[in-house]
Image 1 (cartoon, rainbow, N blue to C red):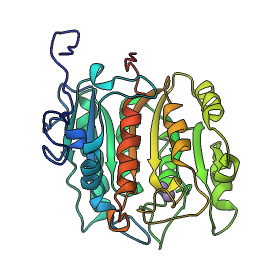
Image 2: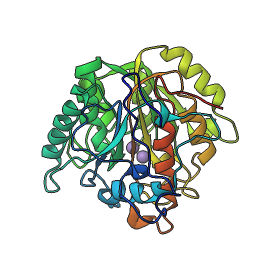
Image 3: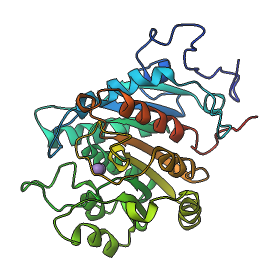
Length: 322
Ligand code: MN
Ligand code: MN
């Protein structure tokens, strides 16, 4: 039994030798669930929504499917030695009740929910949901930590001023975040950007704000560990938020998403990026845009579950064994 400094035992994922992996609670990694973040160091929380999407929907089913696929995950990270469940009190606190008929109200509800999580000094790892949800999370985070650095992995910059005349959508969150002063712009990395655009402005606007734009083409055929060395050096100990859009990955790996672009990152490059965040002062993270209706094998949700686990494994203070 692993205990914390007060002698309380840490929650553990339900093991495959205690309950078959196809049974047990339908929570992230079959962890215990609780209603609030009280007493937790880290929580998994779902934000089921897709009314911010511009094309194919379905991400409202993302959190449930990520949880379903996460039943296969074991607690110890064989590659990195991380033992997150010997380090933190972690639980799945369920889903934020969004308003599926009103995107702007949903954004307000998400911010309020994350204010509550952060009031418990708990680090949220969010199962999305479309990328709109990152804006209200950043609003809540900035109230607690001030403007943050950000590692944003995505095929898209998500800095449109408007979509169909609307300021709030899954392609606008980081334009709004800049306007709201939520980011330290020269400590923002956007990695994996690619595809067709409306104009060069799609990637030049973030560059003009000071964002560090790393296109997918710059990543092709390489380990991204050296990139992450430079990211860590530049961000230092500043609070940082990690937002992982699953469409950053090539559709050969992750077809189950709404806005697919060819020529994307590999799964192992995604792991390079998340594992390369170890040492950063991470204050929150999310994994967004998994759309189960387009994920016929479940592999996209499985990758999402693994990347969320990898985020847990690089949070500040995680113990490494072996
Ligand atoms: Mn996105
Ligand atoms: Mn995207």
